[in-house]
Length: 144
Image (tube, rainbow, N blue to C red; front, side, top):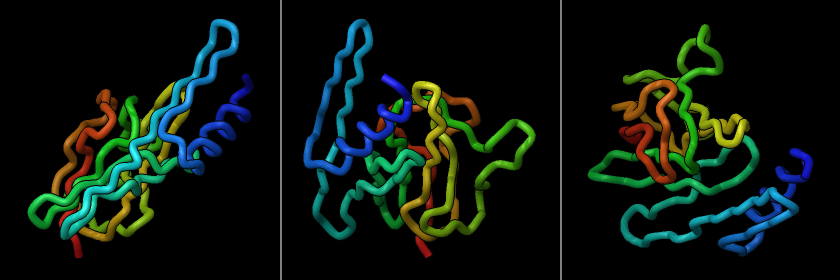
């Protein structure tokens, strides 16, 4: 399957009500799983870490007036576009909703991770080239 078709398939599954999907062709297989749970309370757990391919698969959490942006997938976290580039964010930066906070590389695809909130970066909980898990805390933000 070509990369363009894989991206279209991922987008289609993401936009549907499916929570999991598996595709097998010869020796290759593709398995997708999306967590669509929303926890109710004062501040809901939000499925709002859009990535470059258009998937809303990550979660953000709120803990005692801090917003935690989590990884929407397993992969390698990068703090900048290249080794020569400045990091996307630093502690103390004011960030806006939709601003890129990092990149997670998964299966040779670079997925830009965007903030779902406006706020001030309180802590960056990972370093450049760290392996991250689905749901792992990446950045702590104090809301504005």
